[in-house]
Length: 59
Image (cartoon, rainbow, N blue to C red; front, side):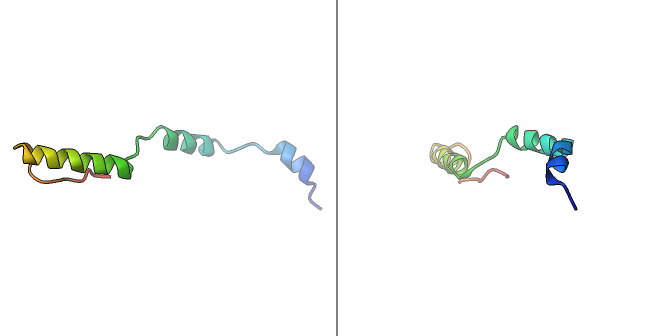
C-alpha cells in the first residue's frame, strides 16, 4: 500500500513549473483596456491628420 506521508516527504517540484511561472509573470500582456486606449488614441490621431483609422495591436 502507498504511504502518502512518505511520498509527500520525497516530493520535489519540477523545475519546469518554476520556469513556466516566471515566463507567465514576466510577460507583458495586452488586455482589453490596452486595446481600447490604443483604439481611442489611433482614432484621435486620424482626426488630427495622423495615422488614418483605428488599428488594433497584434496580440
